[in-house]
Image (tube, rainbow, N blue to C red; front, side, top):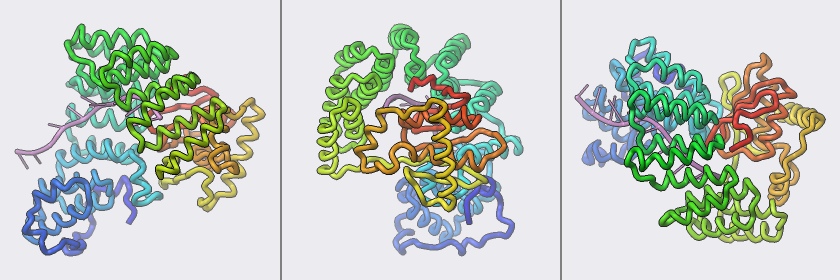
Length: 481
DNA sequence: CGGATTGTAG
């Protein structure tokens, strides 16, 4: 049975006998006891063993234990097993829902899980989350501060900021965590001004910010180009709140300065940090690449490779930098280094939900039954946007050309395929929603802006870190990401 | 009766 948002927790129409569960446990399970197994973490096998143990000992109707098991199954990203366990829970209560909402908002929107069990299951985090929200309202559960915060988080990370704000406004009691969640939401969606406004409002209400509030705020400023505001906030951490800025804050500051093009200031900042870790160098490398400062980029990349030689992302970054600088021999060197160390670049994919089915595309993907139509439509689309003035972004072309992917080059990046499919299928003019596992490339970002105009459609892309709302040729990120 | 919600870079 396919797990769907609506049947995840619905009660079984026919009472299921506990013995219908597969008992994959070894005989030694019972002597271990379930406590040790519960501590085994989010893996399914021990869960099944505990469940079997409960059945054997006659404790299979214990609500608290089953809730704990369901929570672990959810953490393990098995919707099917979560559902199965929920069916056994007598008289499910708000405690169960609080737990499941919390976990699914944290883990459920990571679409990697989709590949894991069923790429075509109806598993949108927004759908699931909205459904649980409705259920909670229908059953009169109080939206307390914890539940409310989980909802804010879920809605903003699923792309529905308005709904997140609605939940926030309706909360009677808001603590610093709730405020931080909504501030973060505005930050992720590129609304730095609003994030800072909310922060000021929070202070007016007499709520004290904590370290995480500052991480969130600085990130919001960094992505909105609000350098002065960010600096002032950073200063205030120690001055006004007696807190000590940590690594995360340092990273945000380097990002804030670097993104704004103040590369030397960012490097000066790093100088003052005691032992700069990989995160700081990653931030500055991103900024150097963004502003095409190759010397500084190479400097940062060398630090990074020394600290984390096993991270493929760093090599990809460095090779991109060399490609941008036109130093193709160096690109080759980096590639060979990767080969020698047996590192593989992460494979990118994009997901779109159509007719309650989740469809997954990777670059140059031809596995979809309607592949021909999709490619024909996409080619047509690319021709139209070229006529409208689109010129492929140089950087990505260079990178792809040395990637053994000449054939498909940029034209068939996963997000473009998913969008073409979306436009083909969703005819009524409603927005197209895409979820990507990596960050978007420059070229796709540019192309989608044109597509939003040519196809007269709103396109919302959630990449690994943030949201991009494309409409009428512009993106909500203001090209600052 | 339990459990605890917010997070930087890529």
